[in-house]
Length: 104
Length: 206
Image 1 (cartoon, one colour):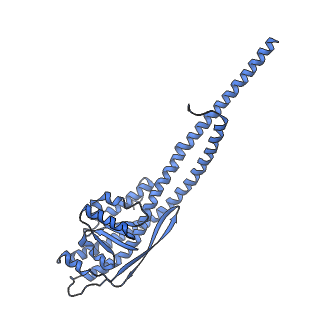
Image 2: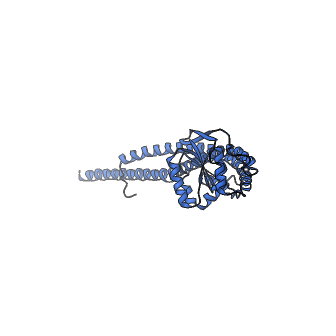
Image 3: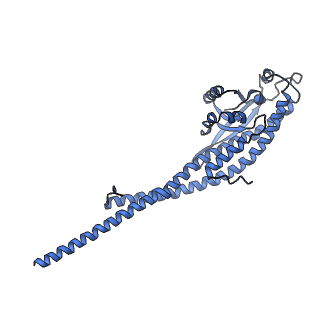
């Protein structure tokens, strides 16, 4: 199985050196094409940079419900936008009704 | 209430349904608690790991951005044209309370160095090394955060079911049963009166 990363091309190219499949995305069309590509192949983990996740939330959302691939939002070059934390907060709120870990 | 048939048959049926509903309620509640316990464990871990990942990744990608800022995208692409490293992930599925959660193990084969030190921008190697280190945590985080997400869907579903049983289905059945039993009692009393009346009339006639 493979690992893939979706993001702005220049900032994620480094992952190619680690043997990760890099998908450069700059528009919604690109993202849809990438999604099709990913569905065809056997991916275990998909990383998505925050810039992309922020711009196309609907396209990303449908990724989440499957057992595989596991989708993870990672901070891009600009540093953390807090999207990952938000995602975690969403998960907590869905499960518990409120975010009880917020304090710590 | 009007469309309930006040018969003993119906009463027995409802009794059976109530028993099943109560049993289901108990089981689902246990499932919810179990899921919750597991979920909290995973979420705590996720939270800590995410923080680490964000920190190490932020520095790594910043460094990468700086070191590649002087060259064109195509040139960077060229550097990594032929990656010698290859990641192989294997995933096993673990069943946590009926939720299938993936667990990942990965192996990187080969070396990340695919470029020549002379043509590569400065600082490339250090930033790649940082990515390499961050990568391990990223894979771990991908696994547990995904597990937390899948669990949260299941918890939501289970909680809805538990609440529906507790606040809607079980009370509804109980009300219906009460209605039927009072209706049946009423019928019995009515019959008794009729019998007494008939007896009185017969005695009068005699």
